[in-house]
Length: 411
Ligand code: GAL
Image (cartoon, rainbow, N blue to C red; front, top):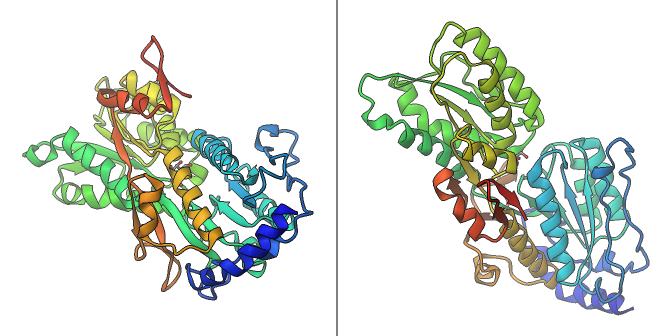
């Protein structure tokens, strides 16, 4: 009952929010009243029934009325097969619950059809707000349109969804992630002072279905381009354009296989490989494995990454990977919670919210569009470079512990 009353109050308070957000029809940045008034729908929207992947089946709800006083939040994560999304899912779930919300958390096993289904079930279950990290930014239209019809606001989490039902976007500055990787390579090889020296480079990018992947690639390649154009960086395989170097689903084995092919085709004759730009840690893991097993040279190859996954942090300690761009996803979930609260309370959403998050980020109304010309207001957090020299920074976040062996594990 308590929740019904809150829903009724919200329905008045949130009319103002109809005017905010990036849905051109205003349909998504709207009131929680419709679904909040359906307080009976308290069952778990859990359709993840793949017995072979029980770990992907994580529907969860808070038990008591008190816990659901803030409303019901649907949290749709892409997969548990990559470490970071497990952390994102757990942090979001914990933080929303601690703030008094009821939650439904699903992982969709990198299957877009399943993600649509999971979101539809959340809507049927009466969620007041959706948080979605898309598997494929262009494949969620059915679910997004249903969210808009039900006046359920959608926060695109980390990856933008290309549908105007999305109200807001929370992520890191994705172009900067790639730029940091490119700058790292420039500094590590001291390219500005390379003179006639030529360094051999290969590139592995992310999933073309992930809207972020192009930003990472462009940020890095734009930074390296002057050196590629000058011949200081030489892509021996000639494989440079995004589609050629992309990795479906950021899959480690796919990255491993392509790297093995490149090594056997272009480096088996003893050609020295100096650097492999990898957009993230799951692809860096495959590339590092290929280099360890299939590279004929004995020099250490500079390898970039992104995320701070445990296996990659171990590779950094062991000198097998050189850096990762760390994104504090606990902070990303704090910003998401702050934004969700503001949306549900009908507060104005702009940069004035940032001090209440207590986390460094920018409010950006220009960089991202859910469709041509339809800007999506975004909160973009700041990524950091991690190498073997500043692993302690991760320990200092309180999110990692360093063992006696020097390896980090996520807490
Ligand atoms: C991206 C995300 C990265 C990385 C990658 C693979 O969308 O921003 O941090 O995790 O997906 O999951």
